[in-house]
Length: 233
Image: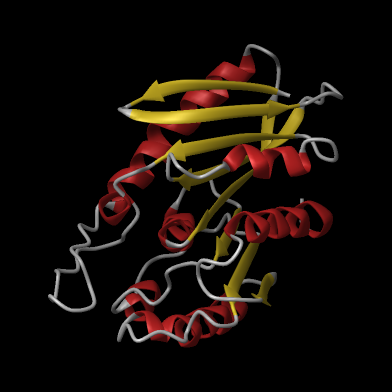
């Protein structure tokens, strides 16, 4: 497996290519994560079994980069969310993916599936950005922050793309057990969106994981990846 790190539009991006069989078509995974997250552990868990391209975008301004619209600080339960997720989606669609496609073309490698995945706020981004992206085929939201205020109305009023082939949703079974007046709706909202997506797309999957929001995040990412490789890709 080859790993390189590069900068593009002020983002630091880890770029993994695992292709020991020298296949000419590979799936591309796009993840947003904190610099502190140990994504190498996730990659190590799948590299001996699957071929893939994986982009890990270090999006440290999560409240700005990964949220769909502005939500002000209410002084109690919410900080400021700047809602510039559409800008980040444009970066992915119009700059990052074309850059990667051009690079891979030098090695005669094509991308045959585009997967956007994420944990927490990155899971929220995977849902709303994936639905609007001109490339994304598969969305994976792992413990996604789908409690986001007014999210259900927002999702119901956007135009979904025609590329979506599969949506994976997961949630910890204790995530709703919080005193936060917004975050306690995460399970209700996630299940509502699950039903909405099932009414639109043929292939949608939801599962519970054990624990609260902060329990074994990498294990949950790995579990999602195994599910996608074994059942979808």
